[in-house]
Length: 153
Image (cartoon, rainbow, N blue to C red; front, side):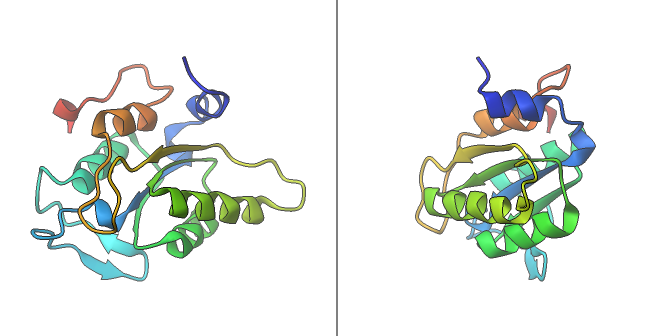
C-alpha cells in the first residue's frame, strides 16, 4: 500500500522528478568519479556500485536529473536550481531531516510542499553506506506501467 506522499509522487511525470543520492553510497575503494560543483560525477566505473545502478535506473526512466551529493547543502542547491515537482531521496536520517527542512524553506510563501519520497540508508557511517536497492528502484519507478528491476539496469 502506498503512502500519501508516494501517491502524490506517482502521478508526477518522470521528467519532473529528481533523484538525490548521498556520495557515501558509492564504492569508495574503486570509485573513479570526480567531484564537481554539482556533486559527484558518476563515471559508471563499477556496475556493482549502488550509485551507478540507481543513477542509471533514474536516467533510463527519464528523470529530470540525479544529484550525488556530499551533503544536504548541495542537494538543496540542486533542488533550487532544477525546480523538480517531486523528489526521491536516499540519505542518512540526519541529512534527510536537514534536506526536508531545506525544501520546505524553498517552497515557503504558502506554496505547497513538493512530494519527497525518502529511503533511509540501512547502514550509515559516511563511507560505503548501504541501502536496499530493490526498495529504491520501486520508489524511483512509482507510477510507471512497468516496474524497474536490478536486471533492467
